[in-house]
Length: 304
Image (tube, rainbow, N blue to C red; front, top):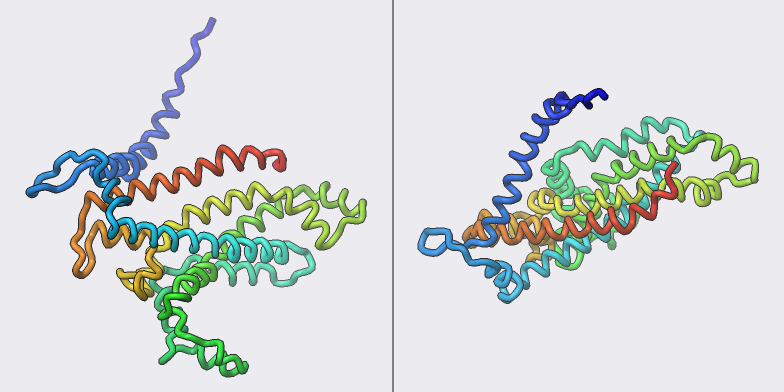
Protein backbone atom coordinates (compact mmCIF):
# COMPACT_ATOMS: atom_id res chain seq x y z
CA UNK A 1 0.00 0.00 0.00
CA UNK A 2 1.43 3.36 -1.07
CA UNK A 3 2.02 6.00 1.51
CA UNK A 4 -0.02 9.10 1.06
CA UNK A 5 2.23 11.92 -0.08
CA UNK A 6 2.51 14.94 2.16
CA UNK A 7 1.69 18.00 0.11
CA UNK A 8 4.38 20.32 1.43
CA UNK A 9 3.89 22.72 -1.45
CA UNK A 10 0.50 23.77 0.01
CA UNK A 11 2.14 24.92 3.26
CA UNK A 12 4.94 26.62 1.34
CA UNK A 13 2.55 28.64 -0.81
CA UNK A 14 0.30 29.53 2.14
CA UNK A 15 3.14 30.48 4.48
CA UNK A 16 3.76 34.05 3.16
CA UNK A 17 0.07 34.97 3.33
CA UNK A 18 -0.32 33.43 6.80
CA UNK A 19 2.78 35.24 8.11
CA UNK A 20 1.71 38.61 6.71
CA UNK A 21 -1.86 38.21 7.97
CA UNK A 22 -0.63 37.15 11.40
CA UNK A 23 1.79 40.06 11.63
CA UNK A 24 -0.78 42.66 10.55
CA UNK A 25 -3.98 41.25 12.07
CA UNK A 26 -3.64 38.38 14.55
CA UNK A 27 -0.77 39.64 16.71
CA UNK A 28 -2.13 43.23 16.91
CA UNK A 29 -5.54 41.81 17.84
CA UNK A 30 -4.15 39.88 20.79
CA UNK A 31 -1.94 42.84 21.70
CA UNK A 32 -5.00 45.09 21.82
CA UNK A 33 -6.87 42.55 23.93
CA UNK A 34 -3.92 42.40 26.31
CA UNK A 35 -3.79 46.21 26.63
CA UNK A 36 -7.47 46.31 27.61
CA UNK A 37 -6.65 44.38 30.81
CA UNK A 38 -4.04 46.91 31.96
CA UNK A 39 -3.97 50.49 33.18
CA UNK A 40 -1.17 52.98 33.54
CA UNK A 41 -0.29 53.67 37.17
CA UNK A 42 2.80 55.72 38.02
CA UNK A 43 4.10 55.38 34.45
CA UNK A 44 3.82 51.57 34.62
CA UNK A 45 1.30 49.18 33.11
CA UNK A 46 -0.59 47.42 35.90
CA UNK A 47 -2.95 44.49 35.40
CA UNK A 48 -6.50 45.56 36.35
CA UNK A 49 -8.58 42.74 34.85
CA UNK A 50 -12.00 43.91 33.69
CA UNK A 51 -11.85 47.30 35.43
CA UNK A 52 -11.54 49.15 32.13
CA UNK A 53 -14.73 47.52 30.85
CA UNK A 54 -16.52 48.38 34.09
CA UNK A 55 -15.33 51.97 33.73
CA UNK A 56 -16.50 52.15 30.13
CA UNK A 57 -20.03 51.05 30.98
CA UNK A 58 -20.25 52.19 34.60
CA UNK A 59 -18.74 55.67 34.49
CA UNK A 60 -21.29 58.27 33.38
CA UNK A 61 -18.86 60.19 31.17
CA UNK A 62 -17.59 57.13 29.35
CA UNK A 63 -20.93 55.35 29.09
CA UNK A 64 -22.73 58.42 27.72
CA UNK A 65 -20.09 58.85 25.03
CA UNK A 66 -20.13 55.16 24.15
CA UNK A 67 -23.90 54.79 23.88
CA UNK A 68 -24.19 58.02 21.90
CA UNK A 69 -21.57 56.77 19.41
CA UNK A 70 -23.18 53.31 19.28
CA UNK A 71 -26.61 54.81 18.62
CA UNK A 72 -25.18 56.91 15.79
CA UNK A 73 -23.47 53.84 14.33
CA UNK A 74 -26.78 51.97 14.35
CA UNK A 75 -28.55 54.83 12.57
CA UNK A 76 -25.71 55.07 10.04
CA UNK A 77 -26.18 51.36 9.30
CA UNK A 78 -29.97 51.64 9.07
CA UNK A 79 -29.74 54.44 6.49
CA UNK A 80 -27.39 52.34 4.36
CA UNK A 81 -29.62 49.28 4.61
CA UNK A 82 -32.82 51.18 3.79
CA UNK A 83 -31.42 53.50 1.11
CA UNK A 84 -28.12 52.26 -0.34
CA UNK A 85 -28.87 48.57 -0.79
CA UNK A 86 -32.40 48.90 -2.26
CA UNK A 87 -31.11 51.54 -4.70
CA UNK A 88 -28.21 49.25 -5.60
CA UNK A 89 -30.61 46.36 -6.29
CA UNK A 90 -32.87 48.64 -8.36
CA UNK A 91 -29.98 49.99 -10.45
CA UNK A 92 -28.62 46.49 -11.01
CA UNK A 93 -32.04 45.25 -12.14
CA UNK A 94 -32.45 48.16 -14.57
CA UNK A 95 -28.92 47.96 -16.00
CA UNK A 96 -29.11 44.19 -16.44
CA UNK A 97 -32.14 44.57 -18.68
CA UNK A 98 -31.38 44.08 -22.35
CA UNK A 99 -33.55 47.03 -23.36
CA UNK A 100 -31.34 49.57 -21.57
CA UNK A 101 -28.79 51.20 -23.85
CA UNK A 102 -25.33 52.38 -22.74
CA UNK A 103 -25.53 50.23 -19.61
CA UNK A 104 -21.71 50.04 -19.42
CA UNK A 105 -21.51 53.84 -19.32
CA UNK A 106 -24.08 54.06 -16.51
CA UNK A 107 -22.39 51.29 -14.51
CA UNK A 108 -19.09 53.14 -14.72
CA UNK A 109 -20.73 56.43 -13.77
CA UNK A 110 -22.38 54.98 -10.67
CA UNK A 111 -19.22 53.13 -9.63
CA UNK A 112 -16.72 56.02 -10.02
CA UNK A 113 -17.51 57.64 -6.60
CA UNK A 114 -16.53 54.35 -4.93
CA UNK A 115 -12.89 54.76 -5.93
CA UNK A 116 -12.67 58.37 -4.73
CA UNK A 117 -10.82 59.24 -1.54
CA UNK A 118 -12.82 59.94 1.62
CA UNK A 119 -10.98 63.26 1.87
CA UNK A 120 -12.06 64.32 -1.61
CA UNK A 121 -15.66 63.26 -1.05
CA UNK A 122 -15.84 64.89 2.39
CA UNK A 123 -14.42 68.24 1.34
CA UNK A 124 -16.39 68.29 -1.92
CA UNK A 125 -19.73 67.75 -0.20
CA UNK A 126 -18.81 70.16 2.57
CA UNK A 127 -18.30 72.83 -0.09
CA UNK A 128 -21.47 71.86 -1.97
CA UNK A 129 -23.65 72.07 1.16
CA UNK A 130 -22.05 75.22 2.56
CA UNK A 131 -24.69 77.94 3.09
CA UNK A 132 -22.08 80.62 2.28
CA UNK A 133 -20.27 79.48 -0.88
CA UNK A 134 -21.95 76.16 -1.70
CA UNK A 135 -23.85 75.53 -4.93
CA UNK A 136 -26.70 73.62 -3.27
CA UNK A 137 -28.69 76.78 -2.37
CA UNK A 138 -28.39 78.11 -5.94
CA UNK A 139 -29.41 74.77 -7.46
CA UNK A 140 -32.49 74.54 -5.25
CA UNK A 141 -33.31 78.17 -5.97
CA UNK A 142 -33.13 77.46 -9.71
CA UNK A 143 -35.95 74.92 -9.40
CA UNK A 144 -37.94 76.95 -6.88
CA UNK A 145 -37.09 74.82 -3.86
CA UNK A 146 -34.68 77.09 -2.01
CA UNK A 147 -36.94 76.96 1.06
CA UNK A 148 -35.87 73.33 1.49
CA UNK A 149 -32.23 74.25 1.98
CA UNK A 150 -30.73 74.32 5.47
CA UNK A 151 -27.20 74.02 6.89
CA UNK A 152 -27.63 70.26 7.05
CA UNK A 153 -24.09 69.57 8.27
CA UNK A 154 -24.43 72.23 10.97
CA UNK A 155 -27.64 71.03 12.59
CA UNK A 156 -27.63 68.30 15.23
CA UNK A 157 -30.87 66.89 13.87
CA UNK A 158 -29.69 66.46 10.28
CA UNK A 159 -25.87 66.21 10.31
CA UNK A 160 -25.61 62.44 10.82
CA UNK A 161 -28.32 61.57 8.28
CA UNK A 162 -26.69 63.92 5.75
CA UNK A 163 -23.33 62.19 6.20
CA UNK A 164 -24.98 58.79 5.86
CA UNK A 165 -26.60 59.86 2.58
CA UNK A 166 -23.25 61.18 1.33
CA UNK A 167 -21.77 57.78 2.13
CA UNK A 168 -24.67 56.15 0.28
CA UNK A 169 -23.91 58.28 -2.78
CA UNK A 170 -20.28 57.22 -2.66
CA UNK A 171 -20.75 53.47 -2.17
CA UNK A 172 -24.02 52.61 -3.92
CA UNK A 173 -21.90 51.29 -6.80
CA UNK A 174 -20.68 48.33 -4.74
CA UNK A 175 -24.08 46.64 -4.13
CA UNK A 176 -25.07 47.59 -7.67
CA UNK A 177 -22.12 45.71 -9.19
CA UNK A 178 -22.44 42.70 -6.89
CA UNK A 179 -26.15 42.32 -7.62
CA UNK A 180 -25.53 42.96 -11.32
CA UNK A 181 -23.03 40.10 -11.42
CA UNK A 182 -25.44 37.88 -9.50
CA UNK A 183 -28.26 38.63 -11.95
CA UNK A 184 -26.06 37.78 -14.92
CA UNK A 185 -25.21 34.41 -13.33
CA UNK A 186 -28.85 33.28 -13.37
CA UNK A 187 -29.17 30.52 -16.03
CA UNK A 188 -31.05 31.55 -19.15
CA UNK A 189 -33.01 28.30 -18.99
CA UNK A 190 -34.71 29.48 -15.80
CA UNK A 191 -35.74 32.79 -17.34
CA UNK A 192 -36.91 31.15 -20.54
CA UNK A 193 -39.04 28.69 -18.56
CA UNK A 194 -40.57 31.63 -16.70
CA UNK A 195 -41.37 33.35 -20.00
CA UNK A 196 -43.12 30.22 -21.19
CA UNK A 197 -45.33 30.48 -18.11
CA UNK A 198 -46.08 34.11 -18.90
CA UNK A 199 -43.84 35.60 -16.20
CA UNK A 200 -42.05 38.59 -17.73
CA UNK A 201 -40.97 42.12 -16.86
CA UNK A 202 -41.30 43.16 -13.23
CA UNK A 203 -42.98 39.89 -12.28
CA UNK A 204 -39.97 37.97 -13.56
CA UNK A 205 -37.67 40.00 -11.34
CA UNK A 206 -39.93 39.80 -8.29
CA UNK A 207 -40.84 36.12 -8.53
CA UNK A 208 -37.78 34.58 -10.21
CA UNK A 209 -34.68 36.75 -10.02
CA UNK A 210 -35.07 38.25 -6.55
CA UNK A 211 -35.33 34.90 -4.69
CA UNK A 212 -32.24 33.68 -6.58
CA UNK A 213 -30.11 36.68 -5.58
CA UNK A 214 -31.01 36.59 -1.87
CA UNK A 215 -27.60 35.08 -0.96
CA UNK A 216 -25.88 38.01 -2.68
CA UNK A 217 -28.13 40.47 -0.88
CA UNK A 218 -27.20 38.78 2.39
CA UNK A 219 -23.49 39.18 1.63
CA UNK A 220 -24.04 42.84 0.78
CA UNK A 221 -25.87 43.32 4.07
CA UNK A 222 -23.00 41.91 6.12
CA UNK A 223 -20.48 43.95 4.12
CA UNK A 224 -22.58 47.02 4.88
CA UNK A 225 -22.60 46.12 8.56
CA UNK A 226 -18.81 45.73 8.70
CA UNK A 227 -18.19 48.80 6.53
CA UNK A 228 -20.41 50.80 8.88
CA UNK A 229 -17.54 50.81 11.39
CA UNK A 230 -15.22 52.41 8.80
CA UNK A 231 -17.21 55.64 8.65
CA UNK A 232 -14.59 57.51 10.69
CA UNK A 233 -12.82 58.91 7.60
CA UNK A 234 -15.83 60.74 6.20
CA UNK A 235 -16.90 62.09 9.59
CA UNK A 236 -13.40 63.28 10.49
CA UNK A 237 -13.02 65.00 7.12
CA UNK A 238 -16.32 66.87 7.30
CA UNK A 239 -16.97 67.35 11.02
CA UNK A 240 -13.51 67.12 12.61
CA UNK A 241 -12.26 65.03 15.49
CA UNK A 242 -15.05 66.21 17.82
CA UNK A 243 -17.72 64.94 15.39
CA UNK A 244 -19.78 68.06 15.70
CA UNK A 245 -22.11 69.67 16.15
CA UNK A 246 -22.12 68.68 19.82
CA UNK A 247 -21.02 65.08 19.11
CA UNK A 248 -24.18 64.46 17.05
CA UNK A 249 -22.14 62.67 14.36
CA UNK A 250 -19.87 60.83 16.78
CA UNK A 251 -19.49 57.13 15.93
CA UNK A 252 -17.45 54.40 17.56
CA UNK A 253 -14.57 55.04 15.16
CA UNK A 254 -14.28 58.73 16.01
CA UNK A 255 -14.70 58.00 19.73
CA UNK A 256 -11.91 55.42 19.47
CA UNK A 257 -9.67 57.95 17.73
CA UNK A 258 -10.12 60.57 20.46
CA UNK A 259 -9.77 58.00 23.22
CA UNK A 260 -6.65 56.30 21.90
CA UNK A 261 -4.71 59.23 20.44
CA UNK A 262 -6.26 62.14 22.31
CA UNK A 263 -7.66 65.26 20.73
CA UNK A 264 -7.32 68.91 21.80
CA UNK A 265 -7.88 68.91 25.59
CA UNK A 266 -8.57 65.16 25.80
CA UNK A 267 -5.48 63.16 26.70
CA UNK A 268 -4.98 59.86 24.89
CA UNK A 269 -5.44 56.67 26.89
CA UNK A 270 -4.19 53.56 25.09
CA UNK A 271 -5.77 51.21 27.62
CA UNK A 272 -9.28 52.66 27.31
CA UNK A 273 -8.75 52.89 23.55
CA UNK A 274 -7.88 49.19 23.49
CA UNK A 275 -10.96 48.45 25.60
CA UNK A 276 -13.16 50.28 23.14
CA UNK A 277 -11.47 48.42 20.25
CA UNK A 278 -12.26 45.09 21.88
CA UNK A 279 -15.91 46.09 22.28
CA UNK A 280 -16.08 47.12 18.61
CA UNK A 281 -14.50 43.80 17.59
CA UNK A 282 -17.05 41.95 19.71
CA UNK A 283 -19.94 43.80 18.05
CA UNK A 284 -18.62 43.05 14.56
CA UNK A 285 -17.96 39.40 15.47
CA UNK A 286 -21.47 39.00 16.89
CA UNK A 287 -23.05 40.53 13.77
CA UNK A 288 -21.01 38.41 11.35
CA UNK A 289 -21.62 35.24 13.38
CA UNK A 290 -25.36 35.91 13.45
CA UNK A 291 -25.35 36.19 9.66
CA UNK A 292 -23.17 33.14 9.03
CA UNK A 293 -24.90 30.72 11.38
CA UNK A 294 -28.53 31.89 11.37
CA UNK A 295 -29.12 33.56 8.02
CA UNK A 296 -26.71 32.25 5.41
CA UNK A 297 -27.54 28.62 6.14
CA UNK A 298 -31.19 29.31 5.38
CA UNK A 299 -30.32 31.04 2.10
CA UNK A 300 -28.43 28.10 0.63
CA UNK A 301 -31.60 26.61 -0.77
CA UNK A 302 -31.76 29.50 -3.24
CA UNK A 303 -28.33 28.77 -4.67
CA UNK A 304 -27.63 26.62 -7.69
